[in-house]
Image 1 (spheres, rainbow, N blue to C red):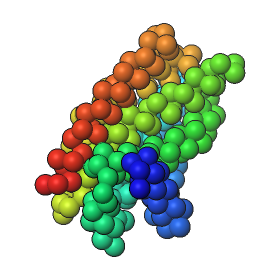
Image 2 (cartoon, rainbow, N blue to C red):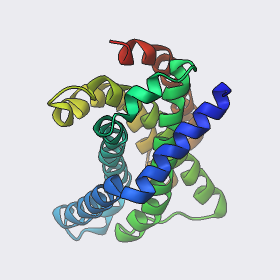
Image 3 (cartoon, rainbow, N blue to C red):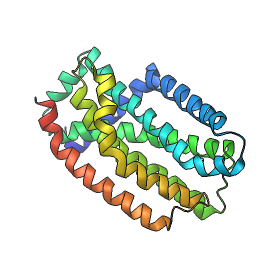
Image 4 (cartoon, rainbow, N blue to C red):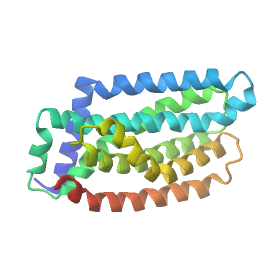
Length: 226
């Protein structure tokens, strides 16, 4: 099996596993819906406050959903011994990382693209123009990519620990701050806020994505071979 075929097979396996079990889907959909509604009630009825809060609430919901999705990806493999089998494949460890990262990225991208119009409508934030809609979709996809690269590495790091549910967000959130900040600012710019030029934030987001991707893919074999 070629490295690319192994990557696609692992990603397909994780996505099919989630489609059948829906373990992460139920948890993330419930959590994101609860987050959006609770924050809407907590922020009050003032329209200006709701509009300014929409980008931050959207990405808070996506970040916590990503933690659940990444953790579930490794947890399901650990329960049936599939992770040990994956690591015996005659392919580089980076291929295993890429397969699992791609599955998490695809899941988060779809969730984000579905969640963005719901959040903007609920909070009264307007996205005007086809270009703005396309840039918002690009922001969601790039933000999901950066988060998936980090979440996959840290989910593997904490997979065998008893307190992994508590340790995963504690260890990961400080590292993912640049990704979330750039994504929030880009989203804020597109929703008519004062986030600054959206192109600058998207370039910054892309730069962090590439750096984190290279670093995480290089470190993955040290994590799983410990």
